[in-house]
Image 1 (cartoon, rainbow, N blue to C red):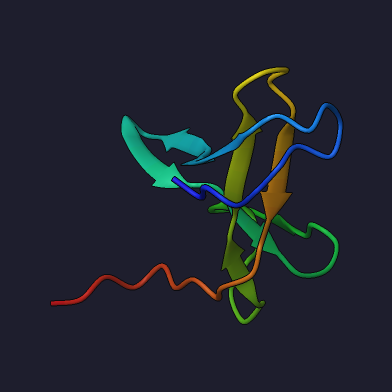
Image 2 (image 1 turned 180 degrees about the horizontal axis):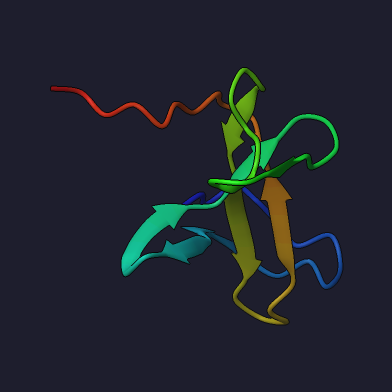
Length: 80
């Protein structure tokens, strides 16, 4: 939990968390992709060769306000 973050709406305490996307029965962290969406026949949207960043989120424990950040690059490749 990020103890130092305060809500910009009500000044309540912000909690660290994440949002989840579901795909084919799996769960993945939400990612931000640079540029406009481009259609792809196989994957519906092209993201190859585009910068991807994992979306980190913070939620106010008092009012529920969500704040999202996409700071760190994220790869779809998993270690072997």
